[in-house]
Amino acid sequence: MRAIVRRPSPALRDCALTFLERQPINFANAEAQHRAYVAALRQLGVEVLELDAEDQLPDSVFVEDTAIVLDELAVVTRPGIATRQPETASIDAALRRFRPLVTIEEPGTIEGGDVLRIGRTLFVGQTARTNAEGTRQLAEAIADHGYDVVSVVPNGCLHLKSAVTYAGRETVLLNPDWIDVDLFARWQCIPVPPEEPSAANVLLVNDTVHVAASAPATRRKLTALGFETAVLDTSEFEKAEAALTCLSLLFI
Image 1 (cartoon, one colour):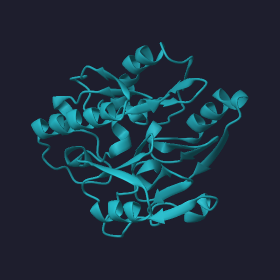
Image 2: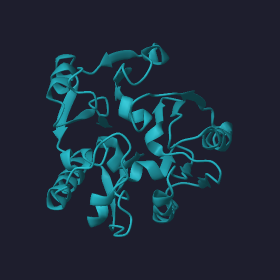
Image 3: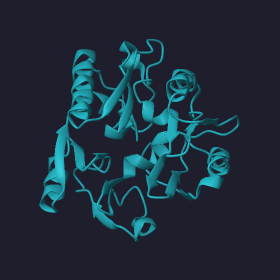
Image 4: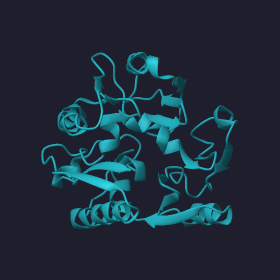
C-alpha cells in the first residue's frame, strides 16, 4: 500500500470553516500529530510519499480532497472553494508516476472527502464542495471500469466521509443524524455514539481501523465487535473541520 501526505502549513490557522467556530490551532502540536500519523502508516508497511508544505495554502495538508485514486486511474479533483483549487497542481505531479490521470473541469467541483468507495461502488456526497457536474464528470471518467456511482446527500457535516466510512469486514461506521442509514443496508451498519458525532470517520489501513483519540466509545464498540483498532490523535486538525482520512491519499 502507498500513501501520499503533505506536511502542514503554518497557514493552517486560516483554514476554511463551514460548521465550526474558529479556534486557535497549536501548530507545533499539529506538526507532531502529523508526524505520528505518518509513522503509524509506515509501521503498518505503507510506503509514504511525503510532500513539502504549501505555505500559502492553509488547507493543503488535507490531501484526500485533491484526488480520487482508483485501481485503474486517478481523478484529480476541482475543490469546491477557490482557495483550495491550487492544491491540485502538486498532487497531479505526484500521482503521474502511479496512475493515468483525468481532471475535473470547470464548472464541476468535487472533493475526495465526498467520495466513499466500497468495493466497486462510489458513493458521492452532494455538498457545498461537490456538485452534480463534478459527479457527472467523475462517472464519465470511470465509466469503462465497472464502477457504480451513487449520489447521496449528507446533512449537517462538511463531507460525506464526515458521516460515513468503510471499516472493512463488510461494515460501515456512520452517524445516522448525518446520513440515511438505509443507503448502506447491504452492509453491517454501526452507528457512532451520539456524544461522538464526528467519530464515523475512521482510517482503514490493511486490517487495522484507526479511530480518532477523541472517540474512545467508538473504539470500544469496534474492539468489542472484533476489529483490530488503533488510536490517532488529530485534535488540532479537528479544529480545521478535518478527520483521519483527510490527511492521506491511500492506494495500492
